[in-house]
Image (cartoon, rainbow, N blue to C red; front, side):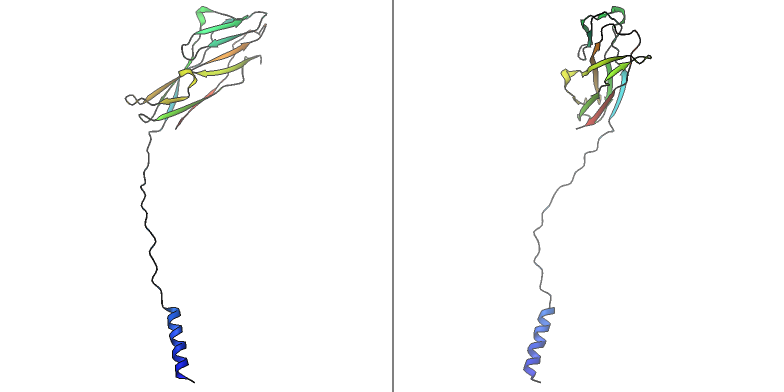
Length: 172
């Protein structure tokens, strides 16, 4: 065998297994952070109460203003002044300065024990309907008033009508 051929073959074999130094990849740095929030709480302080109304042979509405608490009527509905009702009030607590979005989910209707129904047109919130609240930086609280609109039917059956509704608060 030719020694020169063996030497070239051996040199090629060594070159094939000799590691080539790797080129370093560019390095990038990033910052990490975490925002820790106080658990958000929401508590019902007062129930929503449309008060007592007197029906007639003409349908109408009862409106309870979420901003002012004032009650008004249209059509054949008359309010009883000594039972004016009140808007619902909720209080919340959380991290100072944090923004919170509140969502109110109304029931479709109120019912009495006989199964009669009153349509809930809408539930409304104070702050002119703006669902965003900011947790007070000193007291670490926020508040929400809820009013609404009911349709009272012509000759609506007597009774105490009620339903539940849901209010949710979420950090933005």
